[in-house]
Image 1 (cartoon, rainbow, N blue to C red):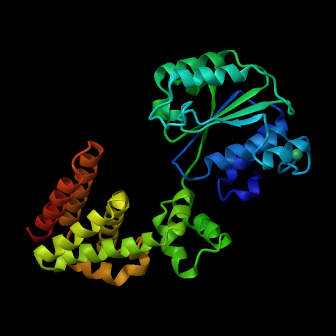
Image 2: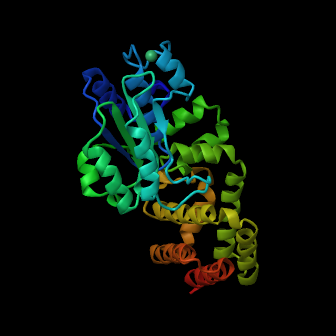
Image 3: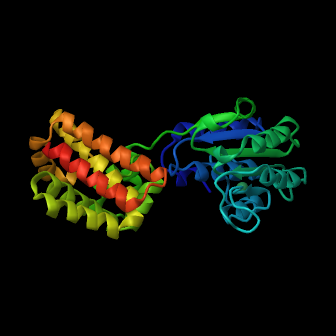
Length: 335
Ligand SMILES: [Zn+2]
């Protein structure tokens, strides 16, 4: 992996390049930031740079270490998803046993390169016991080992772990950077702007959206369903939205997110900030809704969606929660 393949994060690229040039490579790095913004790609570019024999601005691409690392088969660059157990099952947390397995490997010397680089995704899922086990490794690391922990929130890591690592903070990508990615990856012209708007600065989300043409259709259906709740007849409107959410249950969180964005767009229009709305291709429909819904109602509608999501996190029955959501939304709109 080369740095130039990664969109954005220019300051971080410079920082990592300087580290390799200085030769002062630490034992632990913590790449922190939201999911889907390129932390894993950056970790691989950094790892390739560390093992490359002729690193300049990029890993050279011609040495043996580069051949192996570019093909994702370098034995000294080890990505270990510790949330996956021995049976291949995905666990909610990283157990102390998983870290012990990792520990067995850590003290074995590298095969080809001078250093071994471990990339550990979802490191925030480590239990306290797992973190303490890893801390033991951090306290007496073999001279050749470097760990890159990937996290989406530092608050779940122990201060003792944080103090042993170099923290690299990743920010959401700008719309311009996402647009650049969309152009490079041949996204259709008419979808580019709205897809990048909907991606919330996360390239992973942009990729998912661009690979799933139905999602734009689902956004359209959600907007039409919401319009019906505002201007339609009660039973028809509730039935329509109910049917959509029932048939697309696997996309429920997307529908709720679309609803949230629609509500926030209407709020932006009311405050004279139409230029900042996300669903910019639906300005006319949103303008009409902004004529009808005031801030107070918009805020209460947002609270309804929030309360639905909280219910779902607590395993509330989906259909019951949904009916409650639609009725409470209707009541908020029509008082
Ligand atoms: Zn190389």
